[in-house]
Image 1 (cartoon, rainbow, N blue to C red):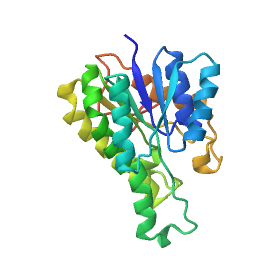
Image 2 (image 1 turned 90 degrees about the vertical axis):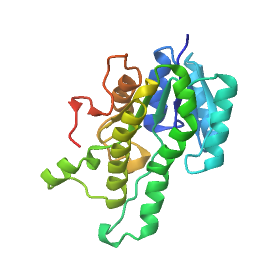
Image 3 (image 1 turned 30 degrees about the vertical axis):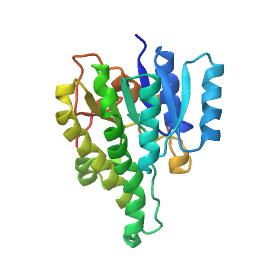
Amino acid sequence: MTKIALVTGANKGIGKEIARQLAQQDVHVIMAARDSKRGQAAVDELSREGLSVELVVLDVTDDSSVTAAAKTIQDKHGKLDILVNNAGIAVWPQDALQLDVKAFQTAYDTNVFGIVRTMGAMHGLLKASGEGRIVNMSTSLASLGLIQKNPDLMLLPAYNSSKSAVNALTVIYAKLLADDAIKVNVACPGFVDTDLNNHMGIRNVKEAAATPVRLALLDSDGPTGGFFNDDGSIEW
C-alpha cells in the first residue's frame, strides 16, 4: 500500500525538496502551504517531474486551518504514514537583547505551537497507519550543549529557544506515542541557503533534505526520540 506523507511549509526551500525526495521513493506527498497559489505552483512543478503529489492549504498558526486539513486527509486517504513538521520562521534581531515578547510569540506560534496543533490534529491519522513517522525540523543552534561549548554559535534568542522547545517536544512525543507504533525524531538540516536566513546558508536544499527523508522512512527497528544530522546524533 502506498505511503501517504504530509509536509508542512512545502511550497519552497527545504520543504519542497523533502516532498520531492519522498515522492521519488514512491510516497504520495501532500504538500501543505499557507498560500494556495504558491502551493499549487510547487505541486505543479513536482507533478511535471512525474511525482505523486497534491496540495492542502494549511496554516500551522490557525487552529481551524489545521483541523480542516486533517479532515481533508481523513476523507481522502483515511491515514497518514509520515508527518514532516517543516514549517518554521526565524527572527533576526539587530540587537538580540532588545527583543520584545512579541518576537518570541511570533517565533513560538509557528515553530512550537504549530507543531502542537498539527500533531494533535494528525495523531489519529498517524495511529491508523500502524507505523507512523514524525520528523520535526530543528537546528544545531537549539543544542544547549553546543551553545555552551561554541563561542561562535549564532545567538538568536527567539529562534534558538523555540527550536530547543521543538527538541524537547520530540522527546516527549516519542515516549507518549510509542504505544501507537509512531516514531518521532528531529532533524538538523544544517545551515542551508533558503529564504529563512536570507540565503546566507552554505548547504543546498538537496543536501538538507537527506536526513529528514531518511528519518521519515525509518523501518520498525529505527530510532525514536533522537536528534540527528547527516553525521549521526547531535547532543541536546
